[in-house]
Length: 117
Image 1: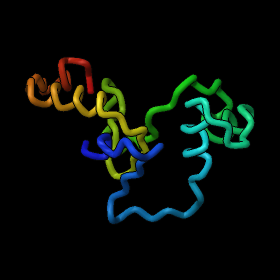
Image 2: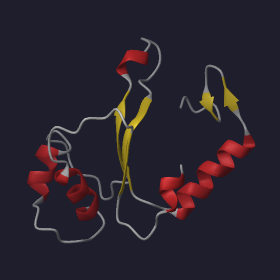
Image 3: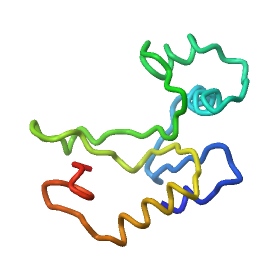
Image 4: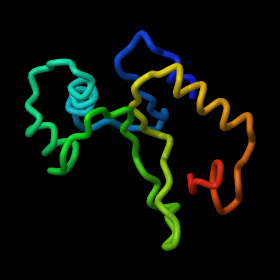
């Protein structure tokens, strides 16, 4: 959560200590920066093929994360696995998450605020 407060950086990477990075992740950073109005030399087509699996690139990417498919149930969406996260720092997002946590509306089968996450 505190990674969102590092607003002096364009992107922040959170990795668990047991994470092993085997390939460069530059294209993930480039996609986040490119969608924020910066020219980093990548074409939209290249980013769409390497990051979005040939789907259109959103106008802004705020995070990349892995999903925890081992925890998936047939009737529920696959949850976020917190061991790998790249995010765009934002004090507003941090404050929003903090408000949600302080509110304490976590439902056993409905997630935070009943939104299924």
